[in-house]
Image 1 (cartoon, helix red, strand yellow):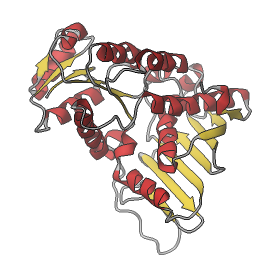
Image 2 (cartoon, helix red, strand yellow; image 1 turned 90 degrees about the vertical axis):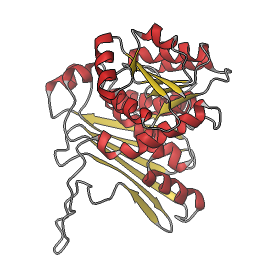
Image 3 (cartoon, rainbow, N blue to C red; image 1 turned 60 degrees about the vertical axis):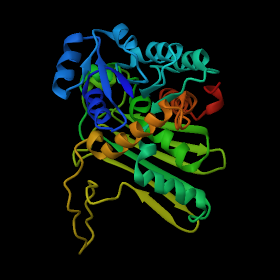
Amino acid sequence: MRLGLAGTGRIGTAHAETLKGFDEVDSVVVADVDPARARATAAKLGVEAAEGIDALFAAGLDGLVVTAATDAHPALIIAAVDAGIPVFCEKPVAADLAGTLAVLDRIEGSDVPVQIGFQRRFDAGYGAARAAVASGELGRLHTLRATTFDPAPPPAEYVAHSGGLFRDCGVHDFDIIRWVSGREAEEVYAVGANRGERFFADAGDVDTAAATLTLDDGTLATVSLTRYNGAGYDVRLEALGSVANVVVGLDDRAPLRSVEPGVAPLPGPPYPGFMERFRPAYTAELRVFLDVAARRAPSPCGVRDALEAFSIAEACEISRRERRPVRLAEVRR
């Protein structure tokens, strides 16, 4: 297979390195809005560089991986579908709900597969939690508790264009709650706080937030988010049932410290960030994309899935700003 990659930032470079390591991939061609950066990445990884995005589309691709800036995602997805090239795109599909709907309207009905990058679906722990819920071994699922705590905030420039904590960070939790539970959210109530750097408030964002979701079968889900967890990167999910429960992310590197007498500390060290925590999942989702691109498997996470997660994030942001419960029917098409 000959694969293209648009966007040679941190995650794009990591994905290009992963792709070139697959036996099925004969060549990888990278491109960037900054051709010099693409050439430097190509030289570092031993792959090809295209002189711009147009040249990338003319490179005879079997699939395209999009890791460019968010505002470039809609045009790249549509261009790939129009060219008949299967595409994998990191979340989000677009910067806002209207943009996501526009992409969906444009490509729906096409037989060209699109896979959106929600890597937690390919993490072993989340997969085991989903299986436990589906099998009934937990009994009646009554509560989900999700946590995403970053160890340190991103730069101010990133925050200003991120779409906010719910859309940028919490959207992963919203997607995985849907995926693990097999249910849809009906209503949310969300709050947020700013006790850190001023640039969060200046961007209309918050650095810490909490949301309660009511799912369509009455299951309750809580999501806690922060940009300030100095203990380390902490991502967990508890699935609690009437018979049993399971926890995702409670391993030797979880940044948790018990103060109960006689309880030994976890050996650590904590994960420094998402790339280290989810490296196997990133590899797994790209391996699946090879099957999707070769038409051996359907997309495991399409644009409509991304739209549902983004709709929950949008509802949470409205709830936070207006200090009221928001039903998904208000934002869902």
